[in-house]
Image 1 (spheres, rainbow, N blue to C red):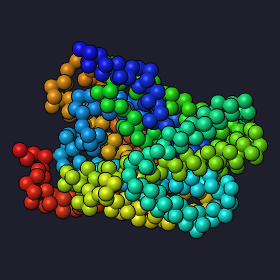
Image 2: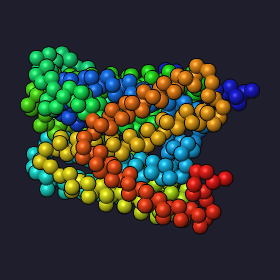
Image 3: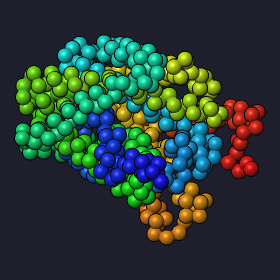
Image 4: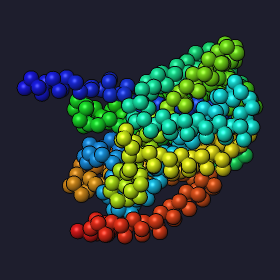
Length: 448
């Protein structure tokens, strides 16, 4: 009994889990959002509303799925369970693409804040070369292992929180409603189209919501605590995101903000002068670049797990002496370098928007597969009765509607290339299926 009590004492309650969920959710992806949302106009507030509702629905569905069928593979495993190896393969590919494109966005954001000190980085060639050099430096650091890469994570997270919360709280003393309401809809399209665009951009700040759900084994009374903490944690993160982005839109003049490569630094400069702008920019650079090595390690885990399941080439499962899938990291690094070259732009904010919309689209397919798998899994486990089943079916519907809404808002280019990627996975799976058959693994979902 003593051991049980000791173990229970170490488990998290509602308050602790809420704070952990909020901190897991918030990341350095927020640093360029004020610029991108300013381009939409203050109608983007509606985009935030729909995104918060949609993300809470997604998070609750993911939390419920993890409670009834704990799986190490997360949403990829849930999609495979519900729909079979092909959908598992397609989900793994899209999830991996989303992860490394997301790292490209962090690089672009970091270079944007670096350009605050070195304006020459606004020139595409110099900005692109700088981003690529920094990328490969962090790949080299990542080769030393997760322990080395993760040592700076708490410090970089502190830098991010200091900037975001500092501007988001103190900035309200300088908030000017006239500046905020300068442009209602700056897209040149209908209000509905603008809201969809804002929702897709805002979703970038919440990508990784599936990883914000902590393992139920670490929580007291998980059936009750996990859903509540998920909602409360996401609401805290939402208040921080919406508050900081809104205050900047009411602080920095619209024409300047839509072209800013360092919106939080510009906001600090308007509040306290050039020195404050320099400090905010330096902290933002640390937050963006400092988180990259950890994300590089995490992004390599998806294809590594896929390779072990026979869904990805075995090269992605090969590790160095530090247990890092280095060859997979190098492949991702080459692809990231290509994206940096292909999206290079004199306007770093525009480049950032192109990249995050690519990442958002690639994330939405795995999300849609994963959330629709919950009712299927609940039915297979004979849990398809009572108010709970109806509640989670409603949440699944809300999550699907929001995902489609955000997908349409990602733009025709993102939809086109996303469709191409999905189409390419069809012939690619034929090679995967052949390899699985040779090993005696299941190829069709109907196989016994």
